[in-house]
Structures are given as C-alpha cells and as structure tokens.
Amino acid sequence: MSKLHFNSATIWRPSDWPLAVRVMLTAFLAIIGTGYLIALANLYEKHQLADGKEGLSVDDVKAVYAGLTINVNEETVLPSRMLTQVRTSMRQYIETDAQFETLEAWLKDGGSEEGLDEKHENGKTPRRVLIKQCMRCHAVSTGTDISREAPFGPDEFSPEYEQMKPYLASDTKVEKGRQTLKPQYDMPRLILISHIHMLSIPMFTLVVAMLFAGARGPTTIRNAILPLPMLALLLDFGGWWLARWSEIGVYSVLAGGAIFGSAFGVQILWVTLDLWSPTRAP
Image 1 (tube, rainbow, N blue to C red):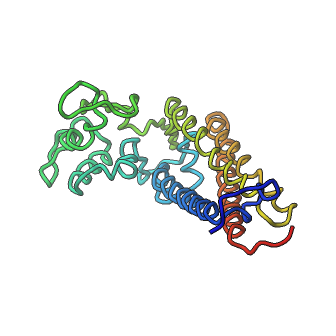
Image 2 (tube, one colour; image 1 turned 45 degrees about the horizontal axis):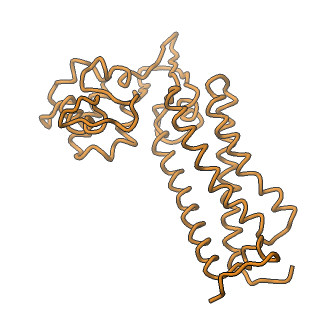
Image 3 (tube, rainbow, N blue to C red; image 1 turned 90 degrees about the horizontal axis):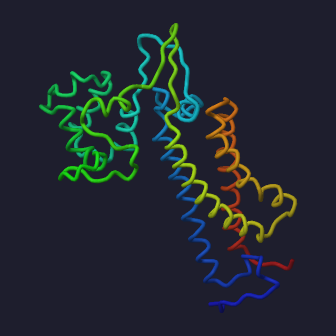
C-alpha cells in the first residue's frame, strides 16, 4: 500500500493520491451520490400530491412555492395540508392501516368538526387516532404523558378542532370556477428549510467540485462543468423565494434542480473514474 504522502506536483491530482485516500474518496462519492438519489425520491414522495394529482409536475412545484390556481369541477379534489402530510412524510408514524384509513377518510371528506368523533367501520374515531398517533410529537407542550415538545414549534397542534383548523383547510379561494391555493411553505417554514439547505448542500458540492477541478480530462470541458452545480444552487434557492412574487421563480427552481442533478452527477462519475484510471504523464 502506498504511503500517505503528498508533494506539490500531485496535490491537485486525486488520481495520484495514495491508495488509502482514493478508497476513502470513492466511499465518500458513493455516499453522496446515493444520498442525492434518495433526496430526489423524498422530494417526489413529499410533493407529488401537492396539486391533488398523482405524479410530480410543474403544478406541484407551483403549489409548494408559489401557490396554484386551477379550474374546479365536481371531481376536483384538493388535499389539505394535513392530508398531504398524512399520505406522505407522516405516513411512517401511523402504526396501523386501520388508523391511517380512519384519518385519511375523515380528511378526504373535508375534516369536519362533526366527523372528528364519528366512529368508522373499524370502531376508531379520527380524534382518537390523532391523540394516539400524532400528539406524541405534535402536541402542545403541556407536560402530559402523551405530549412532548415538537421539533418545530410552529407545527404544534392539539386534537381540539379550532387549533387544527388551519391544517384541515386547503387554504384556498374559489372564484368563478377557479380555485387558488396559497403556497404550502409559509414564511417560517421557508426560512427554516432555506437555512438548513443553504448551510449544508453547498459544502459537499464544493468538496466534489474541488476533486473535479483536479481530475484529468479536457480542460475546456471541465471548466464548463465545474461551476454549474454551485450556480444551479443559486437558481434553486433563489427560486424558492422569487416564486412567491413571480412565476419565474418556479421555473428557476426547476432549471436549478435539473442543472444541478446533471452536472453534479457528471462530476461524481468523472472523479470516480479518474481515481481508478491508470495514471499517465501530464
């Protein structure tokens, strides 16, 4: 095994680095690449019902960041914020299918106050499911046995109808056969996800870019690809905020995501192949 030693001639050429370092970097790239694919799957599951229809589309992105206006007919069903969460990110925390079906059926019917205590065919009421399954994490911090402080304070709620009401409505306005949904990400939530993503994603993007900068290959092509992922992040993050005032922001999010995924994937594959390709004279 090569000794862990660098010199000025090879410091920017990862393919010339010691075997131990190249193994470590390959594992790093594999983890980052796999993590990015999982993140895409998470985005799909989280947002693909934002417009009330199966599958991810431009309208889903509009519904999340900008709000969405659609034509309404008798068959149009727009999910409330709670229904969307129950079907996607929160589904894993509901222990049984019966409890999920009880909660989903109540929410699909509009989440009425009268229906909150109606027993379904399985003998469960929506309120009881909420207490048993949701209040463990999202109860107001009363100090009782079934509640603890939720990780995101603004998301706390109780099984009392008036406090749940903002999560039960589609937050829509209907006018002349058209229905307008406000953005799913309110301002506190947008601030939260912005600071988390802006302080984390650019860091591993920078590491991969620096490895790519030292890889072998046509200089012109590498120089063209090198800045794309970081510039794409500017488009993506900026689009989240711009979308609240202009539809251009929605397309900025889409363009940023497409450019980032493509260029970042190329960089990961390029560096991985370079790490294990036979060395040659510069």
